[in-house]
Image (cartoon, rainbow, N blue to C red):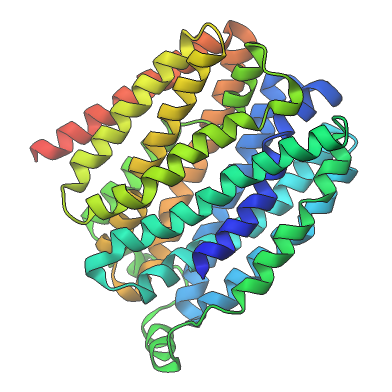
Amino acid sequence: MLGFVSLFMDISSELIHGLLPVFMVTSLGASAFAVGIVEGIAESTALIVKVFSGALSDYLGKRKFLAAIGYGLGALSKPLFALALTVDGVLAARFIDRIGKGIRGAPRDALVADLAPAEIRGAAYGLRQSLDTVGAFLGPLLGIGLMLLWAGDFRTVFWYAMIPALIAVLLLFGVQEPGTAAARARRKSAAPIQWKTLAELSRDYWFVVAAGGVFTLARFSEAFLILRAQRQGLPDSYAPLVLVVMNLVYAASAYPLGRLADRMSHTALLGAGLATLIVADLVLAGAQGLPAVALGVALWGLHLGMSQGLLATMVADAAPAHLRGTAFGFFNLASGIAMLAASVLAGLLWDRFGPGVTFCAGALLSLAALLMLALRGRH
């Protein structure tokens, strides 16, 4: 049920996000740097807010309540995109939308761990991620259809995003949180964020936090994948096809790779994900024509399937049960700071040196993360 909630909210969000970079550049006259600023602030906001929502879900012993607030905010933000007349308006809409994502993310991820037996936890995260990603490619497909139906009218298309968002909120009421005894146990043993609470988190957990941060620094916003395809001649109405290709591969790979994570070394699989990202960056850096861009985007989706559910599993395995919300929160804080830096850096490099240098920089950062992982493996 949590997977289907994610599916419908992602249909809503990606319907907009698949068109938003092109809308900002062509309709609002934004630069790549402005796109990077908007995407960096938006995505890092979502990740940073998860620190507080995760810790609060541990303290209250109520994860579903916070998730409902987050999904509700996401639904309420959708009309603001259609009404935005400036880049600042888009930033405000994205900020509210991502605040909602931040509030719901860590409690929802912790709720998956509460519900799933430890021996199939990787498969559980992979399944939720797969359903989430199905929404992430259905949304752009819907965006393409609506853009063709409404002759490229971005604002009219944005209004349709409200419908799947409302469905997601309604579906959330079908999720059953673990019983009151489990909630009381969490409430008794958890406390608001404080140093002695953080001391309970192991060195293995903090390594996962560091690895996730460096990984995110190497993986800037997917908005730049869309702009890369546009540079190679993809028409505006078909811009969401970039996310369709990426998320088809992501959705197809997340669940089987999640199951694989239950059976093999997490470090080895994460290393394979980084190697795949390096290849994706190099392909996109040298891409001449849309087929090469499509290959790079598909490899980008494969690296997400290898890494995102896996990182969530590694956090859940390394954290005490009563601090899972807090653990996911601090993991996402590190990733949020890295995402802001990565997207701003990508925008600057794009404007000054072009897309080739931008993706080469991503490959170098991925290589640094891979070396960090290899050094950890030796110990």
